[in-house]
Image 1 (spheres, rainbow, N blue to C red):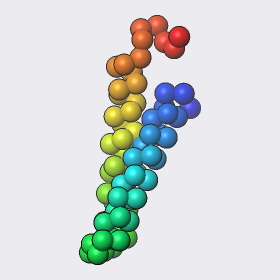
Image 2 (cartoon, rainbow, N blue to C red):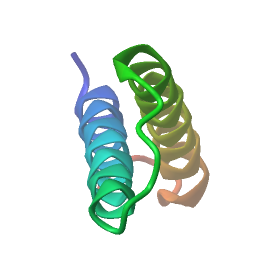
Image 3 (cartoon, rainbow, N blue to C red):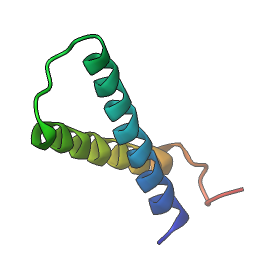
Amino acid sequence: MTPRAKAAVLWGAIGALAFLAAHQAYLLVDGAFLGVGPIAGVALVVFAAAAASAYYLEGRLSPPGGEE
């Protein structure tokens, strides 16, 4: 796995965990529990979106010629 892909996967995990923490806070203030399936699905979508965004942006924002 390339360092760029590994970083993207880690950012995806951070995004998914941030969503799950926000959902937990929502539940703590008496929010309605929607079920494990929908929450897991949204967490996976957040993971994929964060990972894809990180992968794309690292390619766009990195200096030409690789790492320096």
